[in-house]
Length: 565
Image (cartoon, rainbow, N blue to C red):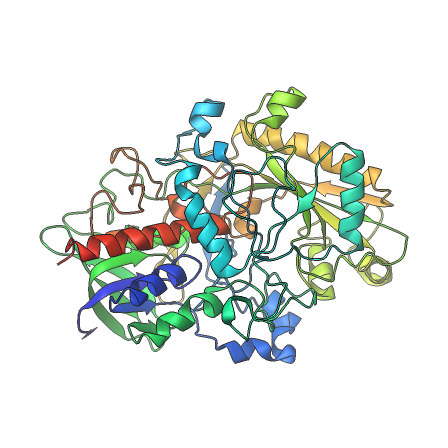
């Protein structure tokens, strides 16, 4: 094993959280080693249209996704082995996200107080309020360039200033969705999206406005309009000379010293050679599922159940976003839903606790409803054809092969739009991630095992949202209306994995404190959505960015105070 000189900080995973934290520490003067399991794509790679719009490479073969085996046990069914979690991979992520950039609501941080604790759940309040995170939301929006229209969503939380960029243009599909939702009494608004709508945002000449090419989800961006750390945070960090990025390096174990402090990271390089990187501070940011795998693999005498896991909570309280998907086909002229980006229009009228308070439902919490989207939120006819008959049912009477199938694709590829509900998932301690005893990845490392069952609250919420989506599509005048609940946890397919190292003030009931610092290992920090206490009914990425800025600030403060010397 090759041993490297000690560094001030080692950041594992250079995506949404790691790409912010590594950059902030380097700019503060710390020496930082960044380990990333994926490749280090240069900006120029995504400027080649023939490269970035290659559907076979990006959609079918998942160039920017982690494609290792994972085991799923869903609702006590038989184990299924396949790449379940749509994890971004590569330096500078998230590279293939849809750029939905919501803030959480004020109530999302106080679900236990405001909504109660349904039987069988493990609902708790976050250890801080929305007001505590608001300055970091603001910074993330202005750093990454979020396009939106403030005060158009009557349910949004308070903010100190407007969005930095005007909202994206609504295509015809978004307009139909908006008009229909308004007639039904909802309050549609432009989805805030980390996609630039003006040239040279942030003084970066290479960031150009969105061209509405439609190739967003699962693709890189040739305009660098999408807010990825590759183009936002890491260039300045690399310019300091304090950041050493090591791509295609897979962290296998975090070691500890006799006092129980994290002392280094053992990892494999692209040739399979083993390395040891000592560090004063270790920050784990490699996705909410794979944070768990790394901690559980890092066993020692001090931590026999895995690093920072003497509480036994690492991997537990797993949350996805329970989804409901629907689409409608139309016989009018083209609706342009396929001309992206996918972040178009949504409404919040059925989010938080409004279904219970205003519609007499028995379940707590709710969902954001997004519409005007292409099926299944990706660009290109191959994605459309691949989804129909597999992930999304076809209309009754339409076969999944042959001439009639191809005629359906040709007719409705440009004459459809989708609607989705992103249902808030409750934390349940028995929903968890652990190591599988038989399945391994291509390096022989145990695969992760996902054990998850729908809570009755989720089942009731999905049933209600399904009826509302069907009502909306019929009111819009769709010829075919298809609404479905995924056969696997929908949030896994979206990469929305949360809660597996939840934060809190009590070390017996949480893994990290409010600054994402391990209760048990003070020089170990965890970035990303694994620290989430609740899942909210909106997308998680902007909250990941905001927490990363807050965590970075705290680490730098402790460093200056000499806490890690």
